[in-house]
Amino acid sequence: MELKNSEMLAKVDHTQLKAYAAWEDIRKLCEEAIAYHTASVCVPPSYIERIHAAYGDRLTICTVVGFPLGYSVTEAKLAEVEQALKDGCDEIDMVINIGDVKNGSFDKVEEEIRRIKEACGSHILKVIVETCYLTREEKIALCKAVTNAGADYIKTSTGFGTEGACREDVELFREHIGPDVKIKAAGGISTLEDLEQFIHLGCDRVGTSRAVGLCKDKGCE
Image (cartoon, rainbow, N blue to C red; front, side, top):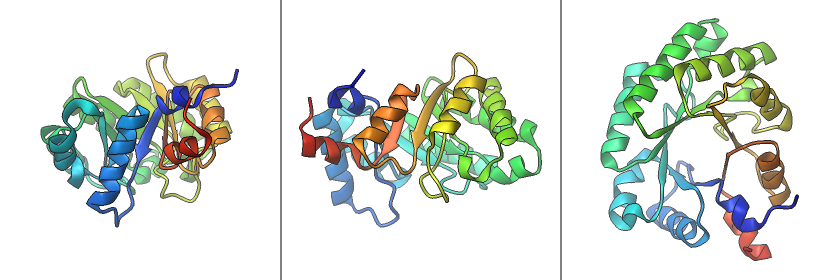
């Protein structure tokens, strides 16, 4: 069944995470998110307080932690979460420590996710596993770790890795995550066809910077 553009945008984390993003870029992102009713804006932590002051509860603010490489120590990630929530953030997208995965330390990965979820409390936590660096077995083990740790979402990619979201990874997640874990696809989603495909595959959220512009071009229905 073909989805309306507005239905797709309601599942989009409208994203601007470029290192050189200026306030004008962030302001435009927020105005578009409000106008087109996206699920959230996903922004650098340094802009949260200013966004919250400018827009209040008119939009949902998402930010990133341990981004984009994930190898910050857990205490640093926890400090990032604490400050983000203090500044007015609503949702957290954290990057796992991929080195721990490669060392086979899945218990350590799970414990970090659990601690960060505890710090998030009722706020949504999405766990970025960066699929482009993982084997199939590692992806399955991470589905278990994310589920056991109580996170709300498993997310494919940062968008800064060698590849982004793909159909096969989303299908693998669906098979191995627990019933309370949702899926976010991100990275390389550049067409409305991509967006619709990932939603039909079962993604509850899609992270992209392009969706609003594409819908503007075709008319948002």
